[in-house]
Image (cartoon, rainbow, N blue to C red; front, side, top):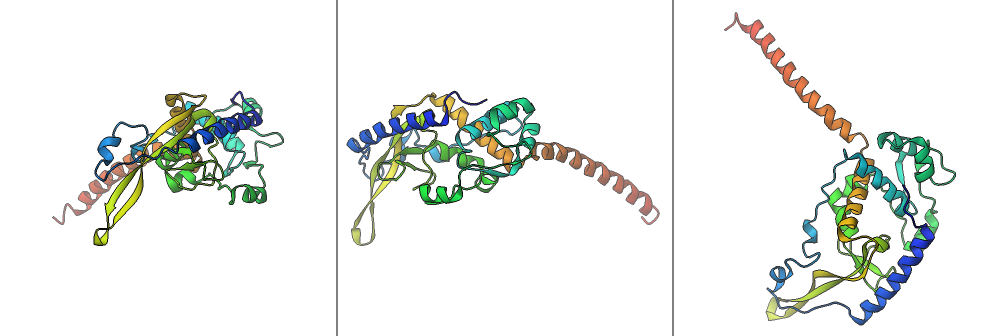
Length: 277
C-alpha cells in the first residue's frame, strides 16, 4: 500500500520543484488590480475562486477509501503527526487489512500492532524546525470538521515570504510545509486590489484573493489529487470516531425500539385508564 517513492526521494523532488517555483513567483508575484465592485462576478469560474464553498463529502462507510486514506497518512503525515488514540491493531481490524499487509505496508520498522500510532519525530526537534510541535490528528476532524481539512489541503500556494515557501488560504501563515506539493504541483495565489472608502472619504486598499494559477505540475491530475485528499480526510474522520458507522447503524434500531416501546406503553396506559374514562 506504500507509494513508490521513498521519503527521501519525495523530499528531494519536492524541494527541487519548490525552488523553481519560488524563482518564478518572485519574478511574477501574481497580484492583480481591480476596482471595487469588480469582485465576485469576475472571479466566477476561475480556479479556486469558490474555495470557501468546497465540501469534502466523505463517507466513512467506504472501506476502499479508508484503506487508501490510511496509506496516504502513513506515507505523508506520520513523519510529523500522531494518532495517539488509535492502535495499529484496531486500524487493521476496522479497515479489514490483513495482519501480514498491515505489518509489511503500514507499520514503521520496530512498531508492534498493539502500539498506538505515534510519530517518530522528537517534539523538541519539531519545535526547532517548525516553530511549534505538529498537532496530534486523532481528533482533528472532529474539532475542525472534514470540510475544513479538505479546504486546507487544497488551498496551499507558493509564498516566497514564508519560511517554508508556502502559505494557505484556509489557515494563513501556516507553519506546516506543503508536503503534498509533489502530488498537487505548485500554484500561486492571484489577488486583486479592492478599494474601499473609509471615514472622511479616505481610500483603503485591500488585497482580496481572486484565483489560483498553476506554475508547476504535480504527479497527479486535478481529479486524482482531489480523490487523494478526500480519502485522507475520510480516514481522519474515521480516526476521530472509529465506531461511528456502527453507532449510526445501531441508532436506527434504537429509534425503532423506542417507537415500539412507546406504542406498547400507550396500550398499557389505555388498558389501565379505560374504566376511569
